Length: 85
Length: 269
Image (cartoon, rainbow over all chains, first blue to last red; front, side, top):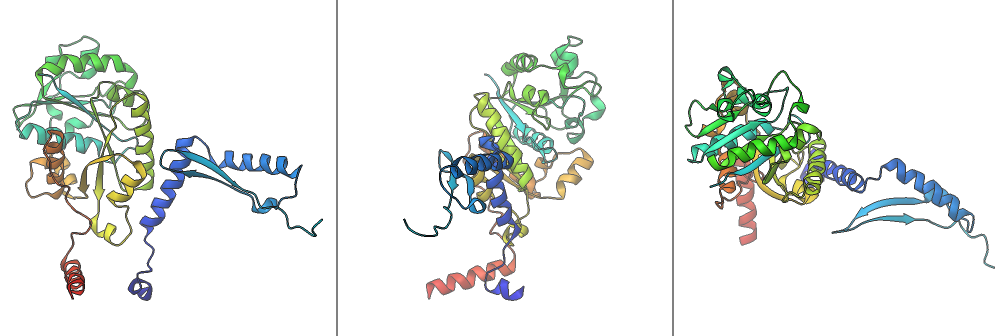
């Protein structure tokens, strides 16, 4: 604890508060709840899996905020290829 | 002459709206402005006790709206300041007794006689809040450095925008400089970063606020109080004066000053 403090590594709760606020506000402003994101994720996985094998456990959808825009970003890793054809 | 209408609101309850209203109204009146404040929290009347005027109430806002008295009769004159008046909320009714149109009408009748009309909004985003917002020229949002309070402030900013009000200005209330320095409390910069509106004042946590409300004498009249000074500064900014923001975040005791001294020495070397 003291070592952390000396090394300036102490993580104040204010930092956590700010991150949580940013997360909550991005969702509040867009009117999209984390549950909606989960539902979209399930739909996306189902739709894409019909065409290509994906690693469904690693799919991530995040709502991000730019200066004037908000966007949904989907990160969809493909399933590991067994062999090249 | 026509008054500027300032609505003090927050979304979340308990962040200091009534304290802010009482202190800004008092500070403006102490600066020779003609001020009337209106308690728009119908059913939960409070501004009267913070101002120490609870014993003088005969008529209230709902009596005015329903035509049981003249506006003048519902205006309670402050004990200390000759140009400060209060129109109290009704205690036995609820928010639906007044409509946003009623508020605009009452405020328009007051405008020619005053420099400032300060409206204390109830918590929440329902009728009472809409009543307080309707006649506003300036919206001041009070928040605390706390996730829930800042989140509610963001909602209110969105609603003021939807009503086509000018962008609200922020009062960050109950800052504890010691906690900010330890990284355990959101600082003004963090809150502004998230809400992206203009800051009009930072008010430090001050036990004098409770003592003042115990006595019914607003803190803005107390020259030794830090929070009192912060409220007076906000009043000056409303009047158009350029008052630099007090720095509650780096100002600190002997240890902090020594640290800065050492740092400054290090840089110079």
